[in-house]
Length: 532
Ligand code: GTP
Ligand code: MG
Image 1 (spheres, helix red, strand yellow):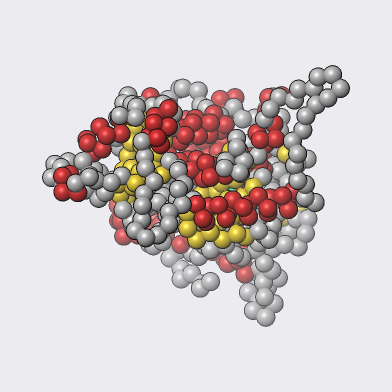
Image 2 (cartoon, helix red, strand yellow):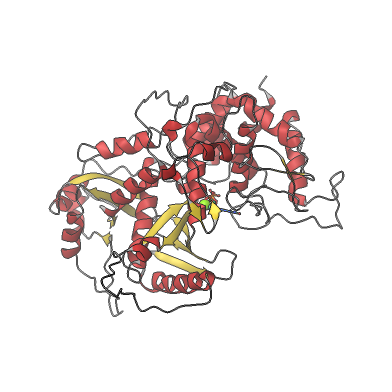
């Protein structure tokens, strides 16, 4: 008979959340010897990866090194909408006139697209120079030049006879049916968790597309702020991304502030004439407002722009049609980037971390504890923090506390953001692997046991200290923000409606009650689950 856990996972309808990539993905098409791609695969290979069996002793790159490499790669890359029937060989030959191609792949998203990475950046200039602005019937066209192109066939019938049609890479998570089949054929809960990870994690191609989209947005923002950087953060880069997850990006003007060496000769120095506003928040609102307008009017493929400027963290939300990503653009979000780096370290240290996070997130989604719509739900970010915390309190610990990572930090790691100490060791190679050998299956069970009995009414979850803390306020679920320690990352969860008490947790919020009940229920499945 299957263990209860097996039963649970195999009945997951796994509504199309996301899926993310196996850490050793095969690049679909590598047009010239692909050393870079191999490097990236290694960089993003979680250490001691039992699931892939890779025993690579190559030093692991830091989060910044990975990001810089990916950004540079994206800057040599273009996005091309292609005719549906296309000869791959002729396509590559045509593009090669602008310079050697490093790698490419095709994907489908309401049409066929190609992502083409050139070996040199100069090739992009050549391509831009050899591309014309279209004329569209009687409509006026805004002559905006970008790295998002359309390839047109001179004689549409000429390419249809191609013997080897292109093979688009898949950018979507598996269907519920396919996933159910995979989970049912898995031999153990551990096997199921590995399956979830393999099927949902970001693929190499999807990661490239994410960095490319970010780079295309950066080009638009650079029209206002030359030298600015648009950075990816959140699950696209923190190792917990699943296919279909949103694209969290922020406009980083730090470099713009620092650009230009400060030359003071004699009695003088020079400053730019600038406008000032009463606060950083207002500055962010103004900047995002104009970039939102610009994306709306000129950004190729950017649709459904919503400016949500009065939010706690002002943002512009839009869809990038060609990639299919929903994008959240913020400004000045360096702490969130630091959180992503911390999560990247935790996710890369031990493969069990990602396996458990994927499993728990998937379970939470299936039980409607999380939602794709922002609201009074527990977030994936909070769930990830809960898993990390749980792994910090194992004996021996699987993950070190943030304070322990701070103790290991050198002077080069020092980082203060807006007065918050965000220092921790960034070189993964200097962190001693855990001696804990517990299986993921056991850990999953213990996770539910632990939180099923957690005193949510009294205690706070702190990944900074790696132990339970007294709750500083009456919020129903308190997960301390690791960097802004007076804040609660699950503050969005409201206190319950007193008219509908949920005994025995009458004083707690609905979401936490549900969470606790569901956690408690976990070991004794299959019990009917309460409706939300
Ligand atoms: P997905 O659900 O897969 O998108 O996970 P995510 O980690 O990307 O979450 P989300 O898109 O909601 O947020 C993006 C990033 O913003 C997170 O990874 C965190 O770094 C940060 N973040 C989100 N919510 C909070 C919060 O409540 N407090 C703080 N400090 N940071 C947050
Ligand atoms: Mg996100």
